[in-house]
Length: 278
Image 1 (cartoon, helix red, strand yellow):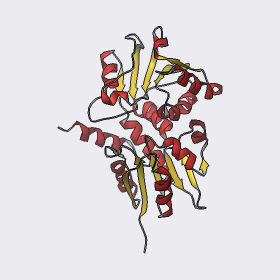
Image 2 (spheres, rainbow, N blue to C red):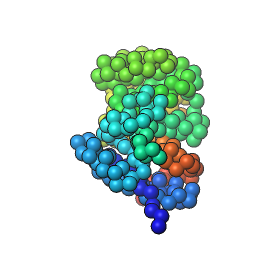
Image 3 (cartoon, rainbow, N blue to C red):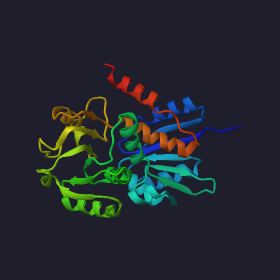
Image 4 (cartoon, rainbow, N blue to C red):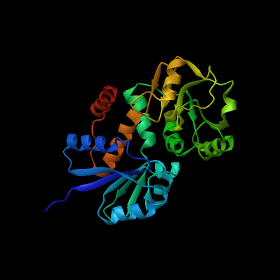
């Protein structure tokens, strides 16, 4: 008798997660037999929960806030992009019993920007707001696109400077506090903080976004986030949230688990239509 392969996303909070719906849509589209659920797991409970999940026959996990650094430490084998970011959002059981750790966030973001929105990063001035785990996962893939300059700005400047130094051999990257942005302009501003979901924003100068520049919030919601609204108010050519990134990084995880890449555009369009319904 065949069994259905089990997958899940761990996080806290997790009730809002669209990942179960996304992976069910992927499974239907590709004819894969699997289950996928969202499980509330705190950082304190993670070591026991992740071990128990795989011991009980689980095949793969996604890990979100605040578990990505813990997942990195749990993984027995890590991809190069996981090693670079020191954070893991995808765990996959291998045939030899080891657990592979990968980070699909950065490639999900870059795919959404380049393929879904026809933005280019090559030669562009790029700013990342925030120096936490979300930033760590996207820096490497962004630098691979050869921006002319990448700046990380954070409320605590030392944290941004330290993070930039980790990636300094890979391109023109620097870190600073928000106050140092007063005389700067950027073609693309990425919000990697979670603050805008609660209506908060860093102190951003009005002239920060260059003409024809774009804004992108890694967070997403049924309503425009505070940062998406900031981008619109400051004349952004595109002011986007992270729904496309969510679907694209999920597709990369699905490929790692199942060996097949699902089509993302129909899923993005469906989820976008659903959140716009009254």
